[in-house]
Length: 306
Image 1 (spheres, one colour):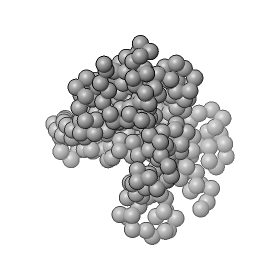
Image 2 (tube, helix red, strand yellow):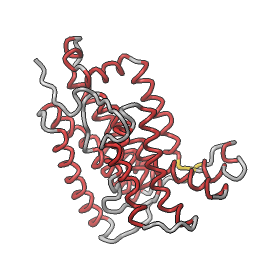
Image 3 (cartoon, helix red, strand yellow):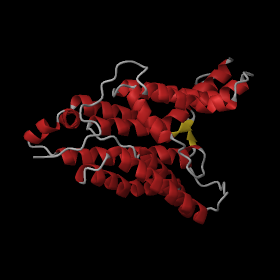
Image 4 (cartoon, rainbow, N blue to C red):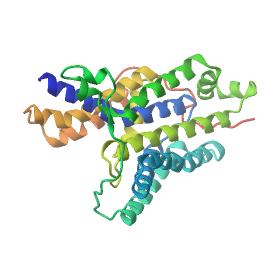
């Protein structure tokens, strides 16, 4: 592999991992508090569709971004209400919301853009950071990315700081490990879980926004294509640790990038095998073959205050 092809592979890995990273960081916060947010796929799709619609109608990608972020708030609150107030099954409600969003965005897409439209919509341009972009051979190829790619770094650092250096982080982790203790301390487990569900929705929406107006500048039916489920698998793969979750997202991004890289290298591999590689890795992750896993003790369990 030449230096140029390797640089293209690294750039593609980072780009393809970005929506997974944003969604997985939110999902990690949610699961730390005991909420298995299966609706993250629908949240990503909502953000992608609302951003594409807002950008197409206004001509401004920034307005599209705001639309995507605002549109996911009611969905996040619905998920929080069903799982934390009504205490419904978190997996069932999440999958139900995903199905609802898939149907709703498909209908909206066909009504607004046409059944087979590939209309190019206004999106964010790539940004070439000073100094990094001037590195010979690899600089421009790797570092010329949409600014949303660089947003993942402060988001990850903020999540690390909150979880490891603040009282809020202690409360979030305790809400998933020992919710009764949190209640006895005077804090509201329900309020904490509402909050992390909302944050998860906003980060997932950012991932969807990147897909539609940051990466390909259009919207297609079901364009998240299972990215939300891969984000959940990344959290499991990472054993509910932030650093390992980020690595898992990069591995999934690299597996997806190989779909395009291997043919360019002249390696003839079955196309179906290349497409299934990220999902095969996800299956290995959730099957427990990557080692002993230690999930939060009350993950996916409703909390019943006394």
